[in-house]
Length: 246
Ligand SMILES: [Zn+2]
Ligand SMILES: [Zn+2]
Ligand SMILES: [Zn+2]
Picture 1 (cartoon, protein in one colour):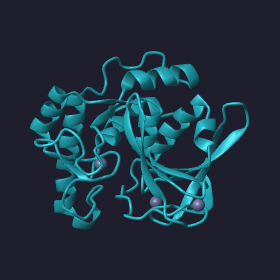
Picture 2: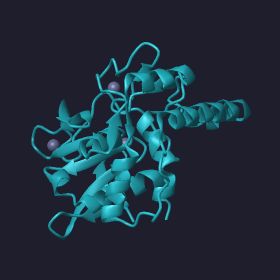
Picture 3: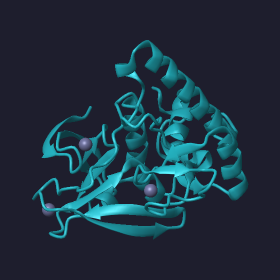
Picture 4: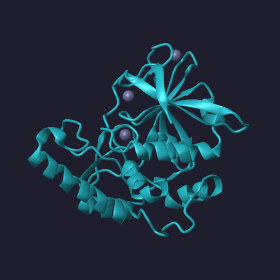
């Protein structure tokens, strides 16, 4: 169970929740979560100490807090330790490009949930035909990395941070869970095709406008722009929910 962290979230400044996760060579590593900002704080080098099993816990925690209102990141992020401005950079791994926010005093770094999943190899990039398919159903989504809106009819990557459009890769997730955690014996074979993700977004948009009609203040996950605030990685995480429910 996570406990409140004494440290503030680099983006919203509210107290984060600290979770002790298994480390590679025994012991635990304490990671701070902000579920409202979809962000994780790692002290210097903590991230590489995480045992593979820890990744399954991170997925579960993210899924458990799926109803938390997702807010975009602040323009300026501050170190959870010293309060200095974090410096944005990019890292490249096989499964894509992701944003990192580091403290120059080497106190640590802030990662979005999406960046963490890209870094750990749990996402795959969409192909152009897949993007065209989703665009036919859903015009605009939000970038999983930076939260900027992406018009799928015109763009095949985020024009703000240039992250490619990605989905959680079910095979990679399944493999990790079976190896390190308690995956169901027979996981569904072909979940999270881009089509399913597009359908899920359409359903969410319908639900959102229904809620808005009934009670404008309670509308789902909106960032105050009138646009549904969803991103492909969060939606695909939701579609894999049978894996995270205990
Ligand atoms: Zn926050
Ligand atoms: Zn610092
Ligand atoms: Zn972006």
